[in-house]
Length: 368
Image 1 (cartoon, rainbow, N blue to C red):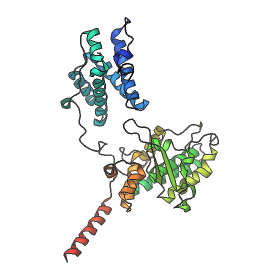
Image 2: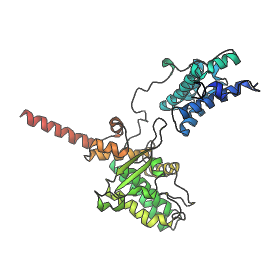
Image 3: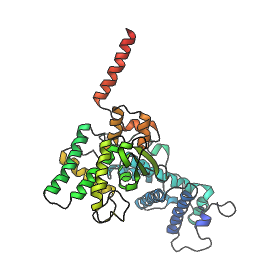
Image 4: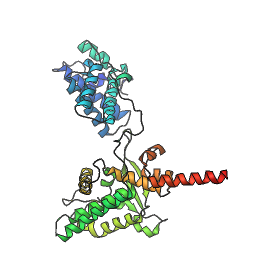
């Protein structure tokens, strides 16, 4: 709040009062967006990336309608949704994100608290209205809206994928190719994503010092635990941190070998903290991880729906199959709710049959 109970996001403070605007429509619209940014940044403490994304969605909607917020109608939203779904083939979760941004912006500009309705009435003879309603927006009805084809990779697929990644290193060395270091790095990246259940961005942002000793597992040396500092944000919050304990010793051995024998060969190894370096001295990007994964996946003839995130799904599934406590797995991968971990779990038929057999045997023994 600023002044005598007036919010710093209000029209009075965002617009310069008493000044004749050369292009009033554009100036008022820009001021609305500026005030909305202040409101999200100040009262709600949202991250700049989140604010920029939402502002960009509103600007795209305005460009599509070729009109201003005080002229928007529900039919404009209907037409935009038809365009996004029918022509651009946007996913349902993406559509709901667009609708959410427009709804929140309309909530802001229609609130008397921020004085935009009165400002628009005085300047344009009309005022903005809420155009997002229950009957013309998508409801969030299910917990998981990912593509149905996305699934955990089987143990056989994981083994084939990692073997193929290792084979690229041997092939590059045998033929004297330049990409041997990158191939070794990428093979280790995928082992980390599966071994610790990390996401692409989390993996990309790892530093060498993020691995450290676990006194309860001295045999793993300094690779007994992984500190993930750039976990997935929620509702505009900062990145969530978590500590993931090492449960796959072979993955720790792979990282140890990479850190000891491969990473020091990169030119920027001494000056950069990044675990995954590039030949130019930068940090490996998530899109580069995705591209290499797709290359190996296609070479093996695996389904196109499989993406690097499926390695994380596989980590969760295989830990549950191996008897790990679901609460332990939930904390390992940083899920806030157990239901999220359950959605990631796709236990195999053998596991389900084993559990069924135990339940049946217990029931039959009790009945006898």
